[in-house]
Amino acid sequence: MSAKLWLAQLHENGYRITKARGAVVEIVETSNRALTPVEVYDMARKKYRALGLVTVYRTLEKLEELHLIQRVHQPMGCQAFISAGHGHQHLLLCQNCGQVEFFEGDDLDVLTKSIAKKTGYQINEHWLQLFGLCAACRKN
Amino acid sequence: MSAKLWLAQLHENGYRITKARGAVVEIVETSNRALTPVEVYDMARKKYRALGLVTVYRTLEKLEELHLIQRVHQPMGCQAFISAGHGHQHLLLCQNCGQVEFFEGDDLDVLTKSIAKKTGYQINEHWLQLFGLCAACRKN
DNA sequence: TACTTATTGAAATTGATTTTCAATAAAGAA
DNA sequence: TTCTTTATTGAAAATCAATTTCAATAAGTA
Image (cartoon, rainbow over all chains, first blue to last red; front, side, top):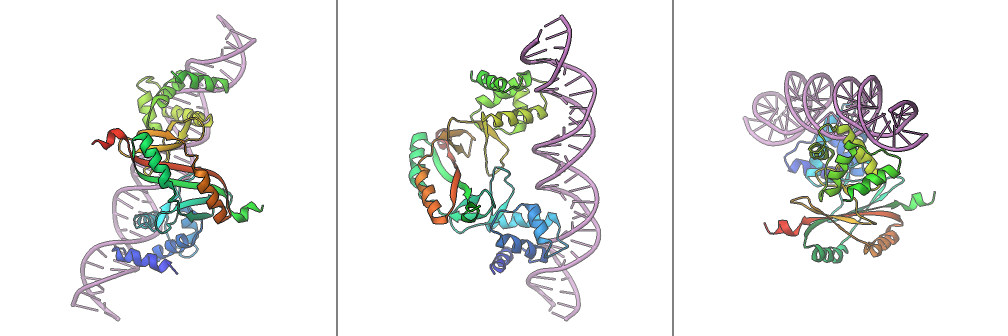
């Protein structure tokens, strides 16, 4: 459904809408866990056989540039992407199934201000990620 | 000074103390910013010319395993290491000079508990990193 | 000192990402 | 619709980082 919006975004920014991009967008937009370029490639090729890995890399690059996806950093690697939440959001990742949940973490203002005072830093940005087990995986 | 302690740690864990390891340890232990393997290689070779890049990779691997260094994740890349703080600490990075400051962030308990309740997750771990400008760089 | 074996650096290998390039197809104009 | 322009494509080649292999070396202990 929202895949169309992503393609519209691409179009508005002067990029053309192609079958290759359609396949990549469809996969990434609907995934609830972070995917590597090769994973996207494998999955999207089920929808569009002729797709090339190079195009996956190039499309992910553009989607990131438009803030439609974001990179996910994990202990095993940092080359994975997930649909970006709206506004300023943080990630909560399931260590078992990889599922990603978004949450807001604006409560950090108190902490950052105290750190700023202590260190003399001007704090511009923060990265916060939580790891654990999702409700479903807890049951096993 | 503490470079000796790191080497002692290596020794205690059954690893031998060599000139190559000495040079790598000396560089990494005294740096106040995260260094990539190649940066360590370039810097450590000034102290020990015969050093090979492979050995840098292998030594960093061991230091990480012993928790003497930790990996630093940044927008530009995630293959950089810095001397690890003691206990559970978070990083504050200067976006200009790369200097790294450690701080404790135990105030997160409230936040994580609230997120856990909201999402049904069992939260095991958290990553928090702040980015900004250090006191020195602010003046420019 | 002599011996055992971890460690070394060079070279080869692997794997991921990027670049090059000619063919193709999307989008707007006619 | 058809035509024209030009972004986009995938394959192959090139690059780059990281790992493995291996014979020579040197650390640590007896």
